[in-house]
Amino acid sequence: MIFVASTGFRLYLGGMETTESGSPEAPDPTGPRQRLTALREALLHLHKALLESERISYEAAFGPISSPYQFLHLVTSDPWFGGWRRSRS
Image 1 (cartoon, rainbow, N blue to C red):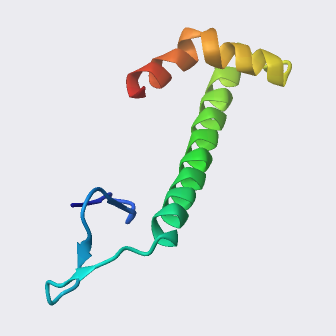
Image 2 (image 1 turned 90 degrees about the vertical axis):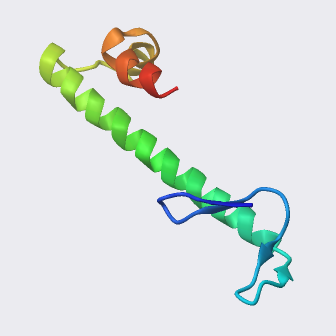
């Protein structure tokens, strides 16, 4: 069984992929790991962009965040950041 995400990454779950002729083909053992690594890096980049966007909005509404530690505290405890984080977890 193969699942295809809209990002173009394929996850192989059970069995083997088949060729166009229908004969089974063993998946490349390095392929899935490389795709998952690329997906991980893309998701980390997206996560960073979302946090940065929310930080900018927060600072526009409430003033500058004084340190990375304060930002971490806000992200983990302030409802401003918690709304979008909790809705997707």
